[in-house]
Length: 115
Image (tube, rainbow, N blue to C red; front, top):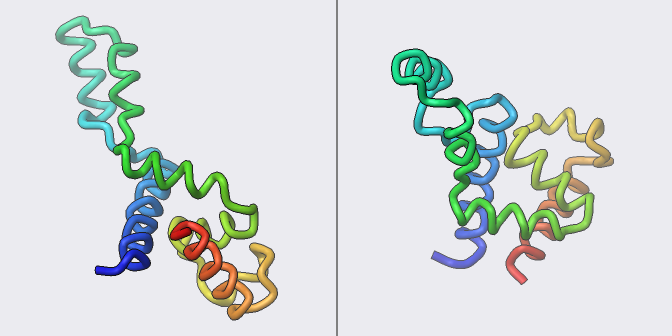
């Protein structure tokens, strides 16, 4: 597997994670209902779970940090493709003049992550 495929695979995983975070469905091992039940039955304070909610896999933190260092238009292209999964016809609303302009920007963003 070449490096480009690895970066795209990581971006797909990062995008799914970010999309779940925006919907409020992160990597917590216990649902909110389960946490409330434990609190009621065991008297365990809810704040003890705060660290658990922020347990982001290390590779996702690394890719997130690399993306944050990219120029704004590159970050937008990555977000549009991997988090929002926007239809080609709606790309203009994200600042891209055409599908080709978006694809070029996305390609440059992926290459920047490789280098």
